[in-house]
Length: 165
Image (cartoon, rainbow, N blue to C red):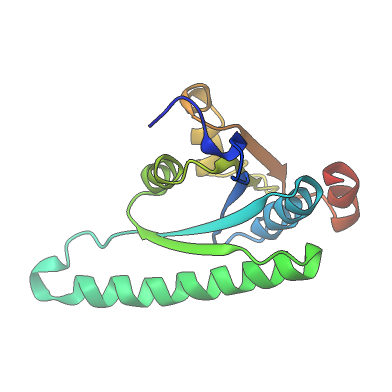
């Protein structure tokens, strides 16, 4: 991966990448990224990651499990895309990957040099911000090739609109 992101070269547009999951706070990250996309003239990519099955490969169930999980991930992406359209008229690119979330996030960033920002939703429950935010927002953040934007799940649409411009 190059040290310079292509998104700042002539003819390229920066992308905001949002990780989509089942958490209710995910809509906050989508709303924020949508508003920033419009404000900055950027584009958006949404990533949903399917966990690979553990030990079902030997009986042929693994592929069926991945297919079922991918269909569920597509439903999540479709709902998030509706949120982006409703929030700011943004039509996001949708990507589904199979693997561990942190690895697939990094792979997509490495593959698409137009990705300039990673947007994550922080849980607002007493359990904490969520494992992905804890992992990527902690020590790993210093080694990431793009800034990580963490959107608190407790923000309202109005608060996000005021913050995002």
